[in-house]
Length: 121
Image 1: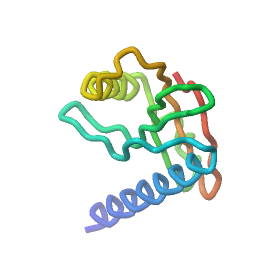
Image 2: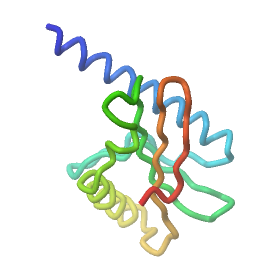
Image 3: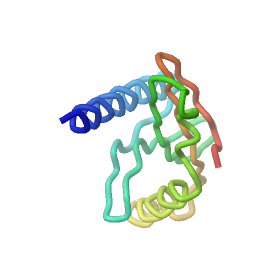
Image 4: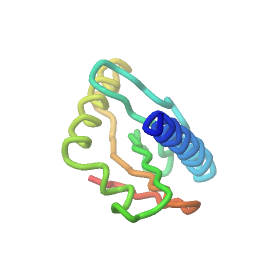
């Protein structure tokens, strides 16, 4: 039972973090194109358009309550990055934007603070 509760709390934290990230990105004048874009290959939390840079931005949101086991950004390891890149490629093919300028960002939420890491990889 305890593991089920912990999993539920992690899902809640993730959802709250994604909403916080969306709100932040909108304030920064990004246009949200997709949220929780899901395929057989995986999921991308937020896909948006950065008007200033003329780029499609694929955003991974990581939220944690403490840095006891490391920073949230450290959870986006090479394997996770490759998975996001494969899903991003599929998105670009499906939306016929294969020649678009793109970048990969991480929005890190630690406790109540948010950090936007552009060009995270």
